[in-house]
Image (tube, rainbow, N blue to C red; front, top):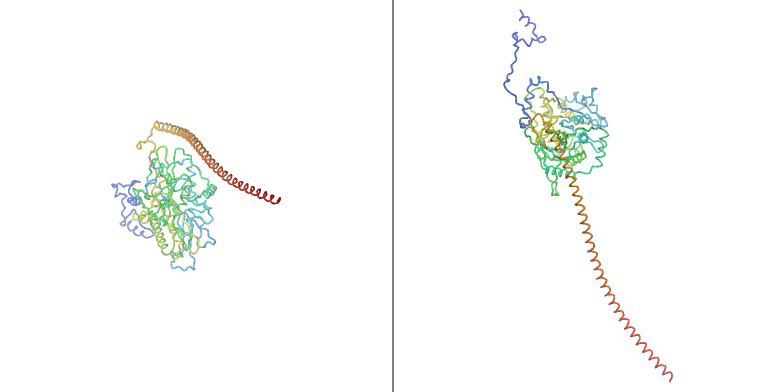
Length: 605
């Protein structure tokens, strides 16, 4: 009777209890794991690159562990939308009352065969920045908190061609973008801790201690590259004062930390990687030198560009100069949409290496990625080489979208979704952010005009995919390594002896005092040597002057003697000439006298 009653009650509106099977028998309350004996293997940072995908799939596929472990916090990228200011914004775009959702709908008279584009669509973002939001607020909202928290972060600017990506990232001469502001923030934070020499460097994704010769070589490379940079002193000072007026950056008060900052600049053009801070060839030719392509290497779970130039910088001005130098080498071209369109993806990386007195080294990485604009060939009018560039750009952006889609679908706990980051050089370089190991912040820019509606829909769809990503891996705030540069410290010991620390401090004080004494002795010796050289130079100049004076006097005496002899010879010649004239005149006088006497005699007769 009970079974008949249950059968009568069973319907679509009143289904059976899941604890009772279809024959109305109670199910056994027993759970058994089929793979209890299998020990999951979790790879650390020393695993090979080929294990990265399997690690990601294993972590996402373990549903029970994920549901039961409350310590894992789901995080995802922050996606910000920025609307470019235009004279007459389109009515197809409107912001919801909540302020974080963009509502789009196509015009009714639009000739478009795709009816899906006519539908009203809602795109949610972390924050929507309308045309009234300036560069200062963009930095404070999107980038500033990540810099203050010292998190490894990738800042990615994405949008259609000419929508203001480069302006948001770099700014112009009057209004600085998020990258110059981030540099000023970093150098202000570590102003008191910046080390004067490059003792630590990130080589092949590993922090290594540089010997004195290598450190001197790095300083020489820095000097040569800065000599190639354009002179932007006046421009930088104006920019510096403008940023200081917009923000109140706070200095860190740590005294037992030495900070070394390195920058690098890379370009991905037609799926080829180029170094934008490489030294030019020494032998300059009339033709432009062929650029050398670099290779992205994935070794033991770490990704790096082999042979990439990383430059040690001491101030924000040095970093801005190198940024301007790299900008001069970026591939630009004019299209129908943008007169100065970037034809490549550019990644400017700032690596902050910190050495603590305890022997711990930490690494914070900030990547600023300026993606080339997604574009439609029929509107940009690209042909020839510009067309090949556009195809490479769109292909890499499509792979980036596939990676975002795979990462967002992984939240459904589906092991079949593997992130295809190896399909493009861009995604291969940014795989740490795509796998959730580092923070990812996207600034999506659109131009709210009717003619860009379809392009904007593609960009907004891409952004919505990124907004739905949820990473379950713990984010890496800083890459830590225990490595002592000045003393041999036992890494296996957990409790450090205070006596040993005191002894090291006394040795440091003694070495500093000895160093100061050596400096004073060196300065004193240099002063004595300078005085000795001055005396030798003075004596040498004095003897030279006396010798020259004697030679001049002897030369003058010889000249005077020669002149005197010449004068006497001339006098004698003139004297003989005048004596002959006198004799002739006397003879004439005698003749005249004799003639007069003859005349008188004749007269007398």
